[in-house]
Structures are given as C-alpha cells and as structure tokens.
Length: 198
Image 1 (cartoon, one colour):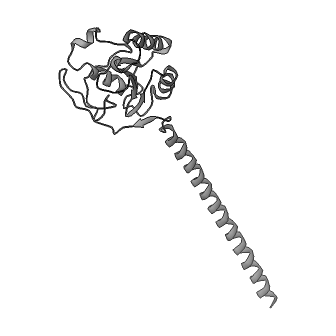
Image 2: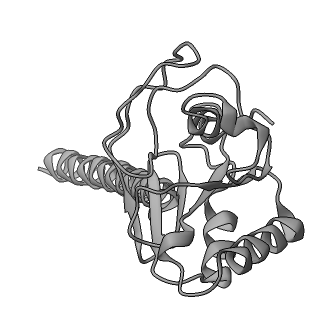
Image 3: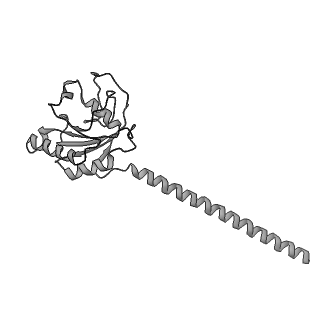
C-alpha cells in the first residue's frame, strides 16, 4: 500500500513537471507569435502612407528605346516602362534641353525607379503666376533637392502632384510643407525597385 502511495506521488509529480514544461512551451510559442506579429506590424507600417497619399498599381519597370510612347494607368505616372537613363535631380521646364527628346518624362520615371520623388506641376491649374510657381519649386529644391525632380505635366487637374514609385499625393494648392513632408517620407524608400542607386 505504501509503495502504491509513493508511486502515485511520483506519478503526480511527473505530471506536474510535464504540465509545467507544456506551459513553458506554450508561453514560449505565444511570445514568438507576439514578436512576429509586432515585427509584421512594424514592417507593414513602413508602407502606410500619410493622409492624402494614394497607392497605385505597380506597372512594369522595363526599359524601352528613346522615342517609344508608353501609356500609363495614372496621370502623372507612378511606375511603368521608361528610358534606360535617369534624369538628374533638379528643376525642369519647357525650356530645358531634355524637352527636345520625345517623351522626356520617361527619364524622370527612371529616376523614380531609383527612389527619387517627382514633383509634377501644371501652371495652367495654378491660381498665381506661372513664374511664381516655378520660383517656389526651385526654392524648395534648393533647400534639399537630393533625389527630387520638379517636372512639368499638363495632363492633371491639380497645380502640383508628388509621386514616388507606386505612390502619389495630389495638391489642390502649392503646399510647400506638404511637399517637404512627402519628400521626407518617400525619398529613397525601399519600395522603389532600385532605391539605393544614387
């Protein structure tokens, strides 16, 4: 009888140890799941846009010969086929030498593939003088124009639209603070296929 009691106590102790091990494993697994969920949330939040920013479908980043017309799903484009050379950072208007090449905006798209932000502007939709708009954009680029291009685009209803690879923010007015914020959040963003290229 005494032997049975000892055996029963040993069995209960063994069961307790097994239960404790099982609880430790479950706790460890739950901790791993919590860490993985937090990491996923952190990574996914990198791609969350600021209010007013739209995500657009990604189109092919294939290169095309200079002079090839490409139709894009958005206006202005946020991704798509383009020339195999990138436009350097800076301000461009109708008098820039690059405008003599057919479809010069395709150079800007290549830059966007490298993580650039393109600020598209349309003087026809600006309440003030065209030279005022251009002057303000030049001044903005002079502050910090690394990987930023200002480029004319007539096929839009807003005076200014900022794009980066697959993202767009439309500005109903010239909002310099909003443009600064867009540049800060989207320049050299890892979603661009070749974002680390200068």
